[in-house]
Image (cartoon, rainbow, N blue to C red; front, side, top):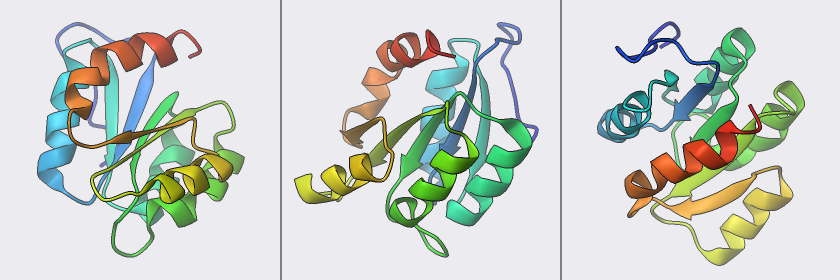
Length: 132
């Protein structure tokens, strides 16, 4: 969904890419991010993620682990090669500690449980936006 961008706050210098196979989750995250005036792009799986990342060069990626076609864990190394400066936040409702450890080993900047993640978005934008 390349090209969906900024809110009425105006264009920011930061760009966020949300990758989740659930449209309702993408909308929830997108709404919270756009409230901060930040540009948002979306992808529904790992294949689309790499396509959008190539075209848009995100500063921050919010990545679900369990998706059809290509999951987040398998796409992480390619994403890190393609966008080495992007912060990658893995977000999953079903991940065990071992999966989060593997995610970090493959290039995730940080990992979060999906439950309660929306409330953390403003702080995470400040934290990872400073690097953008």
